Image 1 (cartoon, rainbow, N blue to C red):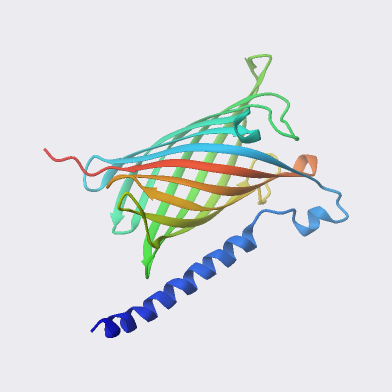
Image 2: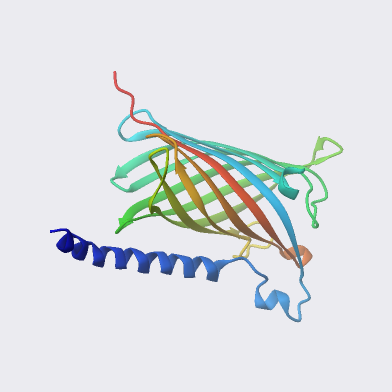
Length: 267
């Protein structure tokens, strides 16, 4: 009987291994690096630097179909020594079917001049956003897709005084895979590995061009704290293009995050 059970699990393990390998290859292929056209005769400048992002992601259902959402991110350069950005993003999610959600909300983003390609002035951004979220399983791997559209109003602070704002749109796509790491556990709770990659593409704005703005490739491990909370630690390779200055930055980022998914409240 044990031999038959092991034999039955073998194809599933093989499928899971193939999918994990495919995700790893996809992530490696997407690792941010200067595009060939930018590294050639165009003379683009590329700089590498260190960063740390600490994030909180919370979803609290208020009915079986409707959830409140909030995520916040504290972002620093030089592994926390210098300010980069503070992001606060509340919203609402609606479940259309198992594994299918839509949602939207707003965001407040405060950005400081940072790094080797600093902006001229600090900025404050108001943002609205809309999401389509898809989730499913492929064997033992949990797979998620996020499609996001953003509308962005950005205002520079010149000597502390708000200047004229600018408007732009952006589309984003993120694919993520995660799976438990065999029997590895801490305090009896499973440890899992994850991979995700997100492409951010500005559209509209002053140049009305569809371009690659950022790519965020991330890998790490997650720890199950209880039935509703997880913590994750990983490495994010963030490629950011500054087309107007013909420059790229590659930020080697320590990623730390806390995740909460509540249960519907009962009366």
